[in-house]
Each structure stands twice: as structure tokens, then as C-alpha cells.
Image (cartoon, rainbow, N blue to C red; front, side, top):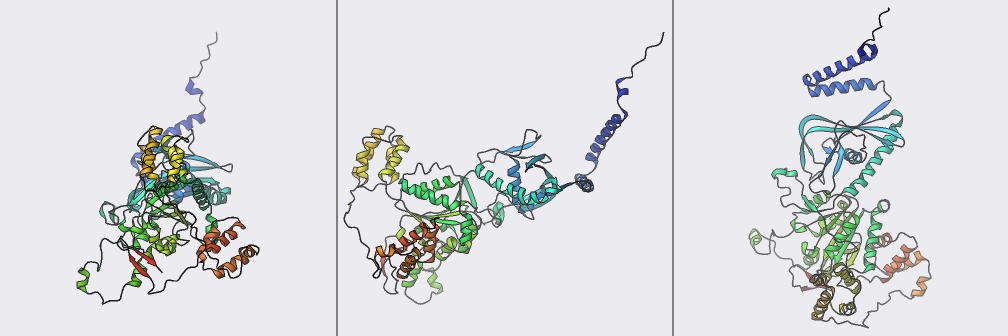
Length: 575
């Protein structure tokens, strides 16, 4: 009887090549573990780079490095890639990071170091990997600072960089198309994720301390103001005009560049207190998704500091100077012209009241302010809106009001029937009521601000009681006389040319003849042309401007009568 053939054990059935591979892998793991424990990390990184450089000679792939810092300053491309790659993370990603900054509302997702991501662009794969390595400690600019000159420094002991790996054939496509796409995409993502901020000046700016002499001059809080154009107590036409002007401004970057103007827009909000100037600013910020910078001119030491602060503000922002007539002396030129020439100041005179340096006065001059909003320094930034507010427009210097500086003048008036209906909808959630007729009749005769109306409606939740309380408030107000039939008719200054004859002439001929008769500046002409995009409407608007402009009277020395005003340093001028 033949003996049975014995089957070989399972390990004996493994092909020799697999057995050798398994043995080599085990050996490699042991060597890697020993190398990790015995070889310094810096030497490991150097050996790894040398090995990769050697193997790359036989590869068809290219590697592009994007460092976190370009010298001492943050690399914009690195920040853009970090934002963009947070949206590329897929279920296949093994590790990634999640964080929530203290003052932000959303959770931020980003790439973990040594983790590889694959992005597809135009049907071609592009591999990303974030690397980190230890470096000697050094101070670099904080990526979150607003401007490098005022930016706070950060002590860094680690260097981060991205590596992009792609085929050699698409090198030009990556550099000329893919990277610009990431920059543009990251801008959109940041706008969607950003939390609006209200920035104000630090008291200790530039005074050293923990932040050193380069500490940031701005501090911020989240801007959670609920005001929108839907809730503003304004006339509907006025709100529509403001929103249309804002939309036209933000989409005309190339237009401003083509006509040679800085991409900025100036607004002057004037009117009595309580008419909604601050609410309008908040509504504009929410509408455009712009941060707001509160510039307190009286807290600044000099024109140079004003320029430095302008540089440290971000693009796509609103710069606000409230109560401009109280923030800076704007009638210096007229006062200087009337001030009699006397003996020069001596040392003892500096100790007398009203002489020498006044520590309470702002170091910002009218000239510095004008250069800030319309000079060379005003072009140090894009997509900026400058807003001045005042309760007394007549106190402002004409040089501050001209187009190019304050392009749009918005009168914030007392509460109107349309504004009241908006407030009633906001506070009482009603759109009609029998008492509306009486309230609207009284509003046409009385001067009451939207703030007063809102405060009265806030006192009662029941609509009937709230509206009757408002009627009592209006009846207590002093009746304003409504003057009718006293419309001033402007005299025509066109010599022998009637309105009918002018309207029949070609547009450019009309404009030329009217400009010969009136005094109009290039800035006023440019601003009028800027308001209209359609070629036919713009010249016609210019004709209306020039035709209605009153002739400017020259101010002659010695003929200006100065009236003393109740507030110090403010004069009223009469011819």
C-alpha cells in the first residue's frame, strides 16, 4: 500500500518572491524605526529631499513649492491655497484640521501637515501636500495684521509650505490658469465666510508695551448691527438710488482704472440728530459686506499718522468720520485771512490762553484731510467708501464738499409718512391702521425724527396704544409753518438763447455753450459722467447740471463779514 502524500504547510506554499518582499518590508520598517529614533529630524528631512531630488530625474512630474512667507511678509498665494484647499477635502482624506477663531461665527477647515490632497483642474490631477519643518526662531509679520507697517510681529519657529505635484506638460496651465483661479476662488470664499468687523483705534497704539512699537493700531468687535435697507425709515426712491449707486460702484473697477480715478466713493450724510445716519452706514456695510473703520480725527497726532492709518486699513471697507464739523477746524483758511497781522509770538506768549500749542486740538489739518480723501494717498487701496456725517453742512469748507471728495450728498430728513409706515411695520408689524391718516397729516406739519417716532412706538406692544401715544407726541410738537407760493425762480443767464433753442442743438454744442456761460470744474463734469453708464443719458445729465448751476461769486478780501457763532471756532460767512 502506497503511503499518502503529505500536503506542505501553508507557509511553504507562498511564492518565494512574496516571501522576499515581505521580508524586505519588515526590514525597512525596522530600519525606519531605528532611523527615526537615532537620526536627527533635520538630517532625516535633508536625506528625504536628496532622495526625492534623485528620483525626480527619472519622473515626468514637476514640483512647485509655495512658502508661507515671502521673506518676512506673508505670502498671499499660501493664504489663498489654505483657504481653497479647505473646500477640496473629500471623504478619502485621512486627516484634516478644524478650528473656530474666538470672534468668528463659522468653523474653519484646513489641511493637516503631511496630508496629501488631489485636486482636479481641467480634467488633470494636481496633488497638494502641506509640509512643516522646524527653523531657527525669528520674528515675522502677523498674517492677520492689516498693514505691514503697523502689523504686529509674531515669533515663528516653524516653516510651512505647500508642494504641488503635476505633469510637466501642464506647467504653463498651472502657473497661468490654475494659480490665478485659486486666488480668485479664495477671495469669494473669504467673502462668504467673513464676519463683519467694526474697527476702532487703540489708545496705546505705537507706544510699545507687549506688542512693541509695531503693534497694530486697530482693535475690532463683530459688527452685528441689524440695520438693512429693508428696515431703514427712508423714502423708497432715496433707498433705491443709494443701493443703485453702491452696486454701480463695486462693479466698475476697470472703469475707474480706465478713467484714471482711484477706486473710492465719498458720501456726506447730513441732517439733524436722530435721523438715521448711523443706521444708514450700518445698512450700507451689511449690503456690501464691508468692514467699518471708525476714524476719530481728534485722537490723531498728525497728518502723517492719518496717512499711516489709511495704509493699514483693508480693501473693501467703509471709512467713517462722524461729526466732521466737530472733529477738525475746517474754517482755518477764512480765519487766517481775517486775522490781523500783529507782533510775533515770544516765549512768554506761549503761556497765555489761546496762544501756542493746545494739547486738546487735533494735529490733523484741513490740508491733510483733503489729501487723505482725494490726494495721492487716497489711491493706496481699492474699493473703499469714505463717509462723513454732520449735523451742520453749512459749517463745512467748500473744498471738502466738491465732487471727487464727497461725491454723493444725502440729506437725512425728519420722519416722513413713508418713513413712518416703515417704522410701524418694523415695530408693530402692521401695514395699515385707521390712525395712520391722522399721523401722516401731523407729520407733514411737525418736525420729528425717526428716532423719536421709534422710541414712542417702542413703549407699547399694542398697536392702538402705541399709535395714540405717537399722536399725542406730535400734537405737543411746535407747528412748523408751511410756506407756499414762495418758490424762488432762478434767472436765466443765457444771453439771447432760450431753453427751446438750446434743446434743439446737438448735445456737445449745448454743453460747450453752457460751460462758456457757467463756472464748472472738471471734477464736477467727471462726477456727472460717472453717474451714468449710457452714452446718451450722461451728456443730458451734464446739460442739466451746468444749466442749473448758480454762478459762483468770488470771495474778495475785506468784504467777508464774520458773524460770531454760539460754538467756538465756527464762523458764518456772508458776502
